[in-house]
Image (cartoon, rainbow, N blue to C red):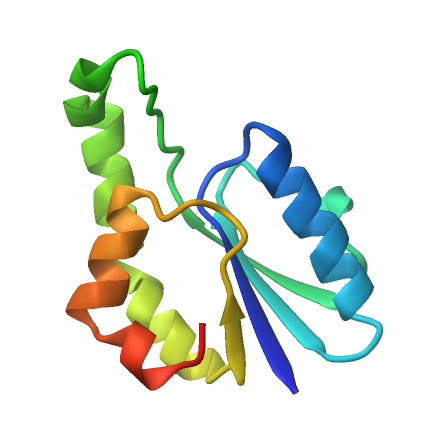
Length: 119
């Protein structure tokens, strides 16, 4: 079985939780993680296949103006390869542990990945 985790940012507790979960599941299944480029390799078990794809997303509920910053637009563009990588992996399940941030939700919806793969 192939399990895919997507970690679109590297701050807060959710990435740490997802890393621990991916490491544990890698003892029983083929685990792939698509993460931001700043994610540390040494956080993952040798059984986890890490793919660094995303630029860092910088968003705060308290500052919506930051949503349209140059860095966030660059981050949004970095998601464009996501559908192709997911199709190459062809996972049995995509496990999203993080809230759906705008770029992830957009590309999952536009490419109908939510219809093609169990999430």
